[in-house]
Image (cartoon, rainbow, N blue to C red):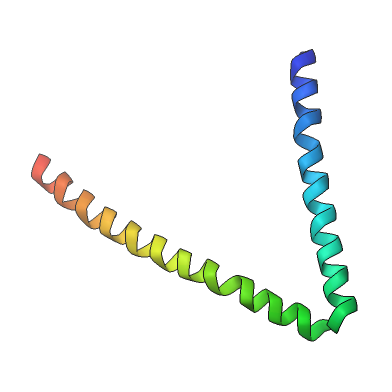
Length: 75
């Protein structure tokens, strides 16, 4: 029981750290150039994520297509 409490305490700090980093980044972007800079940075960060999601969807579709053929062969 004591080990679980210690583990929960260790997991708690990275969440706080990332929250503070995100808050400081947002505040600094607002102070540097206002809302326009925040919107531009959100788009710039989102584009690679969308590309990765598209690649994941293509991979999933290929896997499901291959899995369907394997399932039909087993019947």
